Image (cartoon, rainbow over all chains, first blue to last red; front, side, top):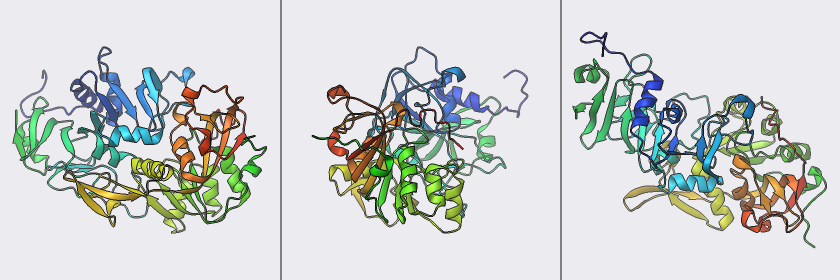
Length: 221
Length: 230
């Protein structure tokens, strides 16, 4: 990358991470997006690519957010934001909507995470606080039911602790479920031997990435 | 003649007993039978178990029901919505019980109750905190937990359009839990935005057949603005 000298790198922004994930979603897939960075993905898809977005509350074919003067109060997504229904979209009840998830009909769920373990364990629903009630929403259903689960998250926490770990310390959402992780530094597959690095941002080295990762990395570059 | 319309919310809420399990439709503000919830507050039943996706926001509706101490236990998937202050306070003080259920398991437990399925196995939640203490079994190599049907004594449902037989349609994402809850309770009470003469609803487009419905109150354009959010 122009302007970078050896050993320097510029982590991807959230939008750039969404761009990177969007590049890997093929035409024709049915996809559910978790809250946070995953929700930035739809606008990064080229308009000719038909990807059908599912929302837990019974929408198949979610379209973009409406302009402020055209909000339909009856149409919200799972994050309770106003959305639109694209041409071809449909509505169903909650049980049918989760049958799509739990019955293995979704090609992909893209989720955020606190931690992912080298065996594919996912922790994205509960912190270790004691005095607040936990909320799970549809996270466990998605993590268990989708045909594949990709995680998009920053490589480390804000204070630099690794999120790619040998074993999750946070409560599990589902075990052995994550297939691929997109971070602001790299793309990694969960392989039988652990995390396989398939891509890194310019200026990043496997050694430098390893220093930011608790689990052992394997190069698949 | 079958006519399930009643003339008031008060009449609709008659016979709701203390200790009842109350299924309440809606996801966020959309599809929530708010006039019936206000009617339940008015009615005064106590020691309720509330089954709803969330645990109330702001200080009205379900949150008000909680604040008045009418609810013993909440069964939901996500009690942490922003503005869910009353539930969080009661929870901190140990004044309310929470049964946290994955959203799809919640929906399926309700559907199972409506369909006479006593229990079912699902991989969702297996190997997690929410699977602890539940019977497990391997199916095709996959660890599954046993989940029980969730029966309601009362279901409060919001419909878009109803006829006197109780045939219902819904509007957009206002459908959510409403049709399955309508099937799962001993007494299903509906508030509807619109009514139609029997025969006017297209039979192909009726979502809830009238057999699942007991009482209907017509609340014309009730709640349509969703303007009461906290």
